[in-house]
Image 1: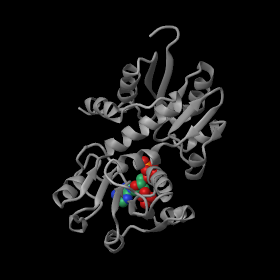
Image 2: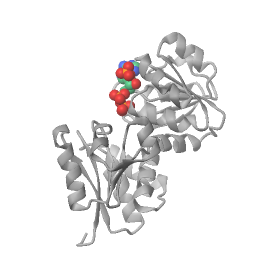
Image 3: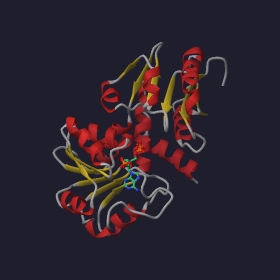
Image 4: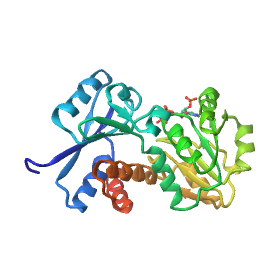
Length: 269
Ligand code: ATR
């Protein structure tokens, strides 16, 4: 680090357990870039001050995580089409102006495309929170998407993207899963608890199953899916691919997702 080191970072609350510093600093090292990525714990009432600080200090780029993904929007100068549509920002690029992007959807798409093509496939997403919305929007461009949510209005609100939204019930799970090629858990169910949002008997061979939860890496959903012959993609792959896309937006450079994953795995231990 010297007087020319570029600063990037993450704002969240909490931010201390984030794997993003490990991933991005590994990428900077690999590419020989004079840059560093830090985590900033920003309480909600300090969000505006933090964004003013980004402008004032010339911080080059930020990731944004809970609980700021929506509330940060009013402090920015512009949004990508995707961030605007889903009302959620996870990446800010500072090129003199602060522009908000969302790379969660692309991250999920790239993670899935490691194991399957998505064109014309039937995708079932459980959850219509920030992550579920981003994934539904991105996949709606290539796939037939159904979103099931505990609060059905939030799933139905996504029908403007050309997806089907419905209530999360055992019957709807059974009905839509019978027709699905890809299943995505976009709820926190399974995080730090041994629960699955889907009864194991509904999982069948050949189904592609992705979880956005990455703590634990092998959620109950993924373990049961593996046991029943499904192809699985863990949440760390989505995290890595959204991070790689943020990195590309900030630097114009591609980074090997495997490298980012190795760094994130170190951080998970
Ligand atoms: P994020 O922005 O990280 O996706 P969020 O906005 O809090 O987080 O959304 C969490 C999603 O998980 C929501 O779809 C939520 O359902 P509701 O919209 O009905 O709240 C869903 N969710 C959370 N806990 C759940 C549970 N125990 N069972 C089913 N869905 C759950």
